[in-house]
Length: 357
Image (cartoon, rainbow, N blue to C red; front, side, top):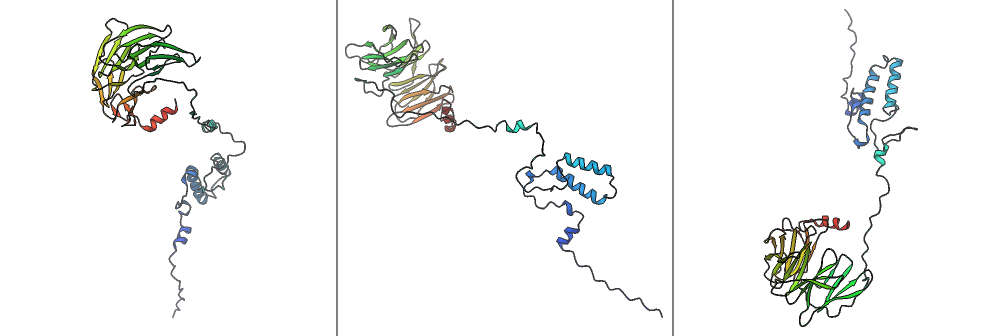
């Protein structure tokens, strides 16, 4: 009777824990579970190192000395010394090798110089000079002061107009009216040699400021002339009769257009710098925009709650107009005169443009 060979009792292998499985898995070197910062890792180099390690484990004995030398040179060209980690848990890039020169460095360092400090315009808190102006008529709707291109200021003091030279400080009398008439408006021409003067008797005159002599009388209004504005050879006048007249000062029949739209006195007139649009404001709280080639208003704006006298065109954006209202309004509004929209320019853009003035 044959004796049975003693049976070998083997214990069943215990289930491998996840950690043991991960350590013995063939893909242990390829796990990519936690990458805190991919931007600081060179994924191309990482892929190369992973594949290299896998091949080295499988073909370690089959590598010839020439292949080993080739792999070392390839690793050196990729910036790896063989002991570098695949994942770099850091923000700062590694320092280059000693003696390395980056010929593209100028592209990254061109704007690294010190930035110039922004210069702010200093606004004086005190007046530079004070001029006495006795008999200045206290009337909101009149325009009694204007500064010409030759640095001369024209000011109307009741019945007399004076010219003050801001460069030399000299003062001369331009004209003086008789009787009950008084000066209601002033406006210099662009050449700085001629000044238009409006009177309470509905008359408008053009004066030669150098010779202090009148050149021409312009009629057409039925009441006082309270606003004036030049556009080359065209002089626009606005009166208490609610009319705006365009005068061509070169010809005998000087009235070329009569603009009707206001219901009360026209107290503000201003041509745009390019001469294509005329803005008018009245005591009827209306703002009108007129095209140079049309006798009807392009836009009729009712944004203000009081008389519109203050008008100012932006010198570097042709379609931007600022207007100021009277006591019951107390606001400054900005208009896009191409569309007639209030606030046509965003406030942030406006402030950016003003900072460049």
